[in-house]
Image (cartoon, rainbow, N blue to C red; front, side, top):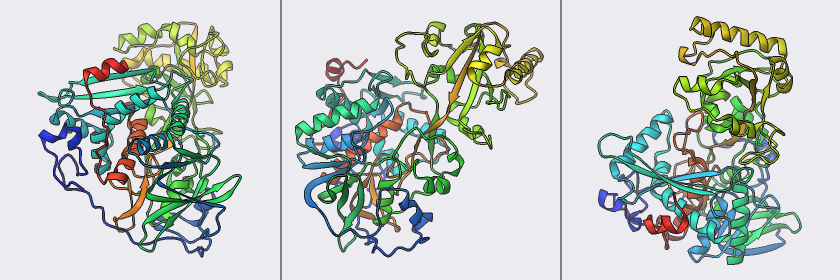
Length: 568
């Protein structure tokens, strides 16, 4: 492993991206861990580090009792568990690096979500060191400084290359990005600048799910072996505690032993569907509806059973609604009422933190439900305070049944309504009409007085609701992801209770690590969530095979690349 520090000279050279610390800090440890496998004697109520108990395993596919009988045994260089946003980049990178690879998938098909993904370009023409360091500090600030510094460092070094590589491999797989854009941010002081490149895979209702299906088919053609309906259930360790493989539980063939010559990459997602873990580790969002299915913390618990431990709580999470109405309308502080028709918050609270107020709706059937109310003069009123409202023609795309073939939406989730009267609007939204009219009347009174004595909304946003027809959006805030798993270092290597590396084991995506430790996942960089998942899957494999973070065929930023792949 190359331990040299990062200098201004080598920071921008892809060949100079080595396994070192935070843009110049000391190299990360890679010493061996101690054995910590289950002996099959765990009793009900027994606990692991940081509160993980037997009940958590009972809610997942992970198994504690030692498995010894197998229907088959297979050997690969890399074994990836999970065919999603992290898993498929891991599989394709293994193939590109000349390794044999298998992918175990709990479901019968690849599964992923999201659309956008982003990364930072290191080329000196695109970003300078001062800009990158300034970007990192602004990101820390946006996250209340709860950042895993090692993971942030690796993301900064590798995410831009990953985005360019994803553009290339998706084109090869026959599912190119719907759009790839680059943007140089020059809002930093002095001469600092940084360039962000973003891919958007699919226009809604398409998503990353369509992407991973195409990537899986492409990977199979290139020689990867996929084992569907075969969740990983238990890691295999040797006497030193190193992970040497994983056991899959095939729907048709029972237990299969998968030996991994180089590493097991756990890319199984989060634990939002594990009720036991949610109640203990994310109780503040436990009452909200989950967007995903089958995310029962399987990979996290397998890692813990093999000697790692859960990242410290609280675990960052994403709860939002980007489907009911145009996304940018969520930026505006429009009258918010609960499903009883009552105003309940200061509307300046941003979408990423709506859940912090909504969770206080104790007793609500679904605390993520509420409505936002405005009138037909919204364009003029929003523009008056400096906002850029979505035009009515685009808003109509989000009215169920109004447009025959709406573009760029999830038809089953759009929930914007326009009615001639507040009574009719209340009926469509499913809230009491009298209470809604009372709330609007009170809102208009506050607007007339120029002072929100109820919640303190900035006076510039106090615009009366008095121009029919009336608009309402029924928002549905649900859990997208819990962004924390077992502890890893900057290369996504699993760490044991002493902070030492468990050889042969990586956790990627939200199975391993806590890149963001803030309460709510920050939107400081749009697309960082999926961008991180893709990047961690790709570079965990590179590190497992080479001991560094230098791909054998890196994709460099260039005007030729931009022209070839249509980067705007």
